Image 1 (spheres, helix red, strand yellow):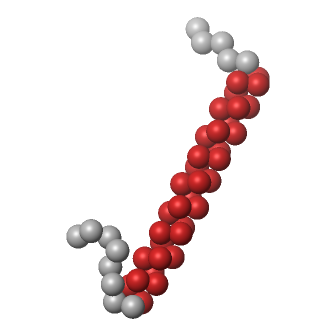
Image 2 (cartoon, rainbow, N blue to C red; image 1 turned 135 degrees about the horizontal axis):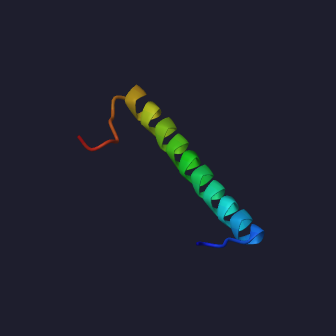
Length: 47
């Protein structure tokens, strides 16, 4: 049985949360760039 202390769990949640936030932020930035590129007729995604 795996025993996890409260501080370990809190640290894991904080790390996971910030990682998810970073991924969402990166995806949002890419999405904005992609929309702007589409508006100017250029596609950033490799086809």
